[in-house]
Amino acid sequence: MILETVSQVLVMKSASFTILCAAVASLAFAGCATTPPPPPKPSTASLPILITEYPPQPDEWNLFPDPTTGHVEVYHQGNYVGAVTGDEPASEDPPLPHLAPDDSQHGGDSAQ
Image 1 (tube, helix red, strand yellow):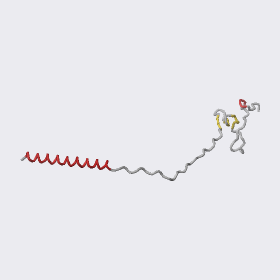
Image 2 (cartoon, rainbow, N blue to C red; image 1 turned 120 degrees about the vertical axis):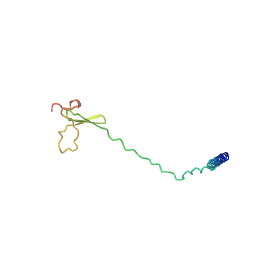
Image 3 (tube, one colour; image 1 turned 180 degrees about the vertical axis):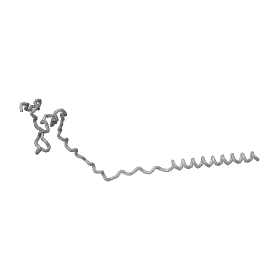
Image 4 (cartoon, rainbow, N blue to C red; image 1 turned 60 degrees about the horizontal axis):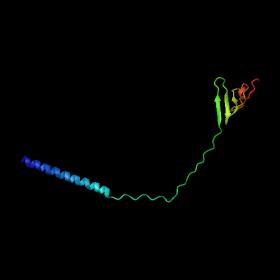
């Protein structure tokens, strides 16, 4: 009797395994059997091409502060323009660069 029960369990297990394999195979075949969707059609409307103009390059101004004297040397496009020394009149806002009296290396008058 025990032998009959064991053989029945083995038959049931093999039947379940066969059904499981058939189900997986049918799913795999069904997944591959469908045709892929057609590729999307290209749009007939042309997209506008945005042409952006870049702003002009800013003038090249360079400021070099000297912490020992408090003067700020000003250069424009590589040429020395002058300095802002801190003793400009209050009405000059912003202060304009000028040749400082002690600016002898740039053509200033050191005798003033």
